[in-house]
Length: 113
Length: 116
Image (cartoon, rainbow over all chains, first blue to last red; front, side, top):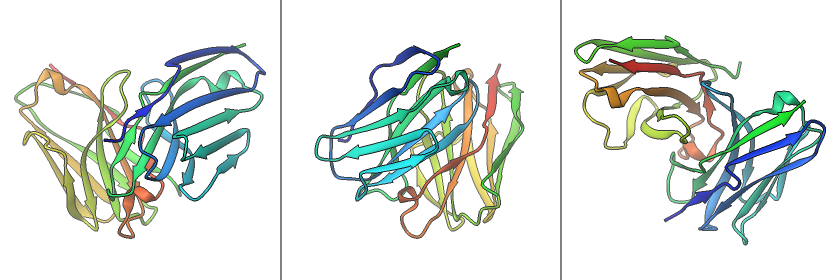
């Protein structure tokens, strides 16, 4: 059974720092992995989707990497800003399921001005 | 247009009320989802419609009744809910070329539901 873990559960860093959020999964037979951002009480915003055949995806200051063999993905945020404060969730798409995602519990990120 | 809209934003209802949540997307997506999210938890999948047909029902109690009137609209009808059903209800959509979750899911802002 696929399990997805995000450590740490919370992270606080000063503005301007580069940072890495981690997502690990137990079964390497994934189809893709998606990173989302959620502001308090709001919906989820899709940040990046990495297909299993890809190693990384980039969007602006965000870079997501995928290493299936080690069961890990990282979300790199460059030059962090207070507006990046949110909860970041990763979700794994399975090979044998058309629609279901397996979710991590999220990392709550606080960027201090 | 990469937007999923949901109405209402907030809903307070008693346990004997009947209400509906609405979701709309105009991205041409043919898979639409309902999720339930409790505080500090990830979303839990409730229902998936693919090409307007119910594809997944994750053993959701019958007091929740989904409906997909057309390819752009998704409703969730609520009846005789319990206080523990209070949560953020999220709608999402994606392409559905046979493998919906293998495409990017786009979420709406959610409806904050409180059951008294």
